[in-house]
View 1 (cartoon, rainbow, N blue to C red):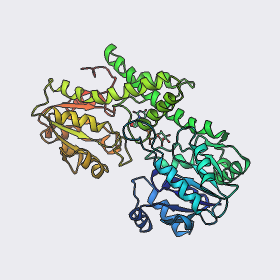
View 2 (view 1 turned 180 degrees about the horizontal axis):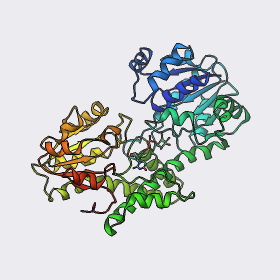
View 3 (view 1 turned 120 degrees about the vertical axis):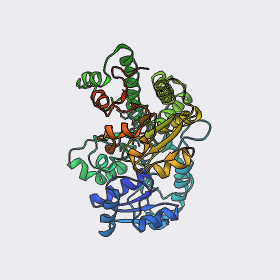
View 4 (view 1 turned 45 degrees about the vertical axis):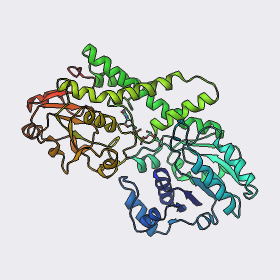
Amino acid sequence: MRIAMIGTGYVGLVSGTCFADFGHHVTCVDKDQGKIDGLLAGRMPIWEPGLDALVKQNVDRGRLEFTTDLGAAVKGADAVFIAVGTPTRRGDGHADLSYVYAAVKELAHTLDHPVVVVTKSTVPVGTGDEIARILKEEGAPEGTTVASNPEFLREGAAISDFKHPDRILVGAEDERSREVLAEIYRPLFLNKAPLLFTSRRTSELTKYAANAFLAMKISFINEMADLCEAVGADVQELARGIGLDNRIGAKFLHAGPGYGGSCFPKDTLALLKTAEQYDVQQRIVSMVVEVNDTRKKAMADRVSDALGGDLAGKSVGVLGLTFKPNTDDMRDAPSIPLIEKLVAGGAKVTAYDPVGREQAEPLLPAITYADKPEQVADGADALVIVTEWDEFRALDLKDLKARMKGDWLIDLRNIYDRADAERAGLHYRGIGRPGSQA
Ligand code: UGA
């Protein structure tokens, strides 16, 4: 199959590269000349484990190309995937579809043969209908069809998620779209990944429902963590106790500082906007969002409580800035409201992140950036673990304590045991574990 992928952001680049790795011929197209030049020179615009090697391998084998020329990219293509950004629209919480529609218009004018146009970007219900309308209005070749094929990959584990999906979801209204997508994904369902065909609207909504449900699990366990702290129970044991029930499932039950990233915050808001538009209540998702927002803002209070309620002149070391490990993504990261509040309270903050510094600096200009994790401990009254990078899991706690002025370890990801911290002379406060309450 010949595939054109419009947009070389996270989803587009990973999907395009993996399709090429299946043996398809893929041309990735992006308007950003700098990005394309970088990719042609082997520089990745995002930090994703294993991606650079996979891109190189497929470029070398002649299956993966990069261009800014849409006409060249769609020449002879069977399918054209749209993987441009759908950020939250400024001011109103709706998904901003201007990039999607601009790409579709240009595509309609460029195509010289019918293709299957596939949305990979997360798009609200009805976007496929609107794309079909625009294609027709703008004179796309007769027989061009529109399908929805949402992506379920996680940043940091994107390649493995793409190659070992729990399911492949295709929303289509015609046989040609179903045939082309089945052929594109054939290597995966030979591996037994279920290929689920639904209507286009169902597929579009299913993507939002999946992210909202996962966000709900996180907000649920975070509130349970608060209750655990109050009653002296342990949220990690509780999560295991409920997670072993197959009906519940063990994943996405890690209590922490609240979910962030480019998907859950944006998609839960967009889902609420869709519900509002159709005048249907979504009280659960609305509460999930509220619980998460409140939680992220409350994380700084844990630090200030530990330090006696006054942050002025205190020194705080922060380990981890990105919204999760194995990514440089800072979008909606819990570290942002935490650090902003610490700084506003008069604390001096020193932070370390293995790869997120460049993305973090413009967002958090008022802090010092360390080059090594242990440096954040120098003279610190408290250390806060915000992101569970592997390199923070086996730090020499005694050495950290020796470097510090104070003795608080506030572990927002529960990667240490209280006993180990106390043996190193630290006061420990985790999340939802006995002794973690203020
Ligand atoms: C998420 C979904 O997991 C993917 O399936 C989906 O395709 C993607 O959004 C998307 O819509 O594109 P991602 O945002 O990359 O992927 O990251 P996750 O691993 O889901 O983590 C999201 C946030 O939830 C992070 O802030 C993480 O720390 C938090 N989280 C996750 C928890 O606090 N507890 C958990 O148990 C799991």
